[in-house]
Length: 380
Ligand code: COA
Image (cartoon, rainbow, N blue to C red; front, side, top):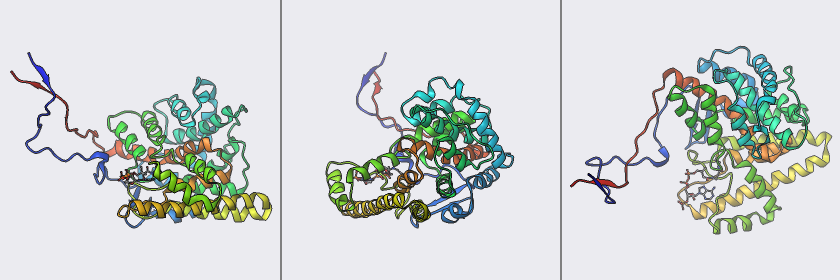
């Protein structure tokens, strides 16, 4: 018979160091994207993110990433259009998924209803359809059927009941492209872990949605907007952030696990907001005025946050990440803030599907080890 003792026993003569957070641990080789943390460079499918967002549509990037990961796919524009229409027919069969309060809970629950053998374009299309349907349901409005003749970004705005002028469509399209893939981020890793067990596409994507929901990953843009609302005017940014840091709070939209300089996606989105403002200015002077006030406030807040975080952490650069300007861009496009993370998922789901295919092709069961620090049975 054995009894328990609280004295930890060494498992190894010299235990390997615990890689909490897996920083710097390389567990996959990928053709899809490269995150250069020191120089602030993101390469997706061989293109700098700035160029990709400026010149490629979301569908064209689907084509690039699925080709690189050997996903057999038809012309993405056609396949996604058809798949959006098919996903819409599933809405009556989603139980109470769309009635859930939180958009990411609703997305997780509704994507779970997809058949586990569905294709990459079906899961990408369904994510957009279910996100839009959740927003409409929560607003007490009828869900708007997709229109397969529209591009993916335009149809997403259409299903949300938002304006679909070229300026907003371009803004949302650039956003979806900008966030579609980002190395082995937490949600992509989660999706790859599930795939590595031999599980199916939908289960892996659901794992990605669960990981993306967290405020340290994809849950920050809504709180960024809450912060800008709370600050109110640019002159108050510094005192507000100082008080927040004194309370031990984190400033949402600042800091990154990999980047030691400003996240390159922040600049892409900041430029997209500028373009949106300039274009809207010609037709909608009042709206332009409101939007440019927001950008001014965001910039002042970023500068104050950067300065104060630098004072606190002089050796650990904490600069704006993608979510900081995501908030401002999606707001300018007209997306409700409760939907920001779900729209992030509508872009990132593309990267998940490509990584899942890559993992399936040449991956190995991902099964790290832990160091046991609990009680050992005492030997008599
Ligand atoms: N605001 C205030 N302090 C921050 C901070 C932030 N946004 N980000 C990091 N820090 C502080 C940490 O508290 C820690 O301080 P300590 O050493 O005194 O404990 C230090 O900086 C190092 O941070 P660490 O937790 O090691 O960074 P990480 O690599 O684990 O975390 C993030 C990266 C993104 C999770 C983190 O920067 C964060 O929480 N940012 C806010 C949430 C956000 O914007 N998420 C979206 C990411 S794309």
